Image (cartoon, rainbow, N blue to C red; front, side, top):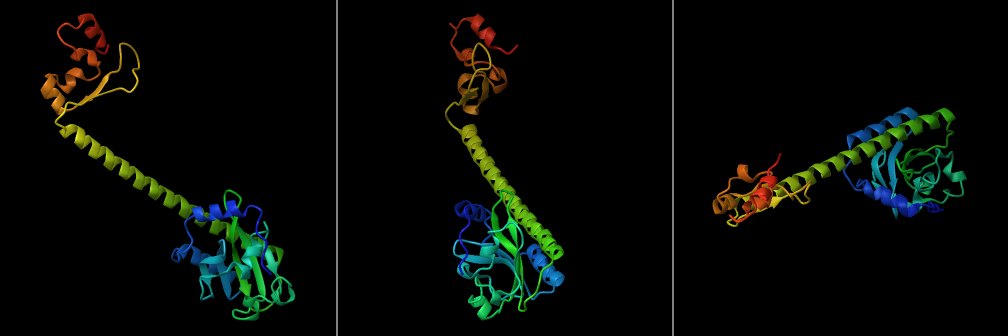
Length: 251
């Protein structure tokens, strides 16, 4: 039986895709968690499963040779509908799964337990799940332990996302600095005189000069040091009101 869609499916999928983790290579941090889960609960299969639009994809798959299955076959698609551990003691006795190909054929799932992987924004993106080929019960203490491991998976997902965000920020900053260096080179080496002032004057009598290039100093006879912090009024001709020119100098 195919699981119904969560009420927030569109937002959930957006949160999943923003992680940019689907179809990425295996990573040791996630593989350690599934290996530990398999050993702790003595099961042959443990997965970090992320439920996509039409499939469930495994970021880590201990004891399984495939990286994804159809969503319609997915036990985890049922697990993300719950905020607690979703447990199927015997899939052959559960109408939702009795005719499921994963139950009737290899890997012959009988027992399933999945703890939802809840994002910081409250979306169940998938599950940390364990499976067995024999029916079994699952205690409250075991469920709590599986939830603890699922929380570690979520921490790894968020840490990975934060690291990727930092890398992108650094890359963007480097691009910005390159553009600034290029612009600076163009301004410095320009044949035309360039004068840069404040965008908005902080006080009277007007905007202050922030920079002039070498072409400006050649054409005007004023050095950068002479005009820095003053207003363009000092560049007016000999008939300029000397009082206005004097006021243009910084105090």
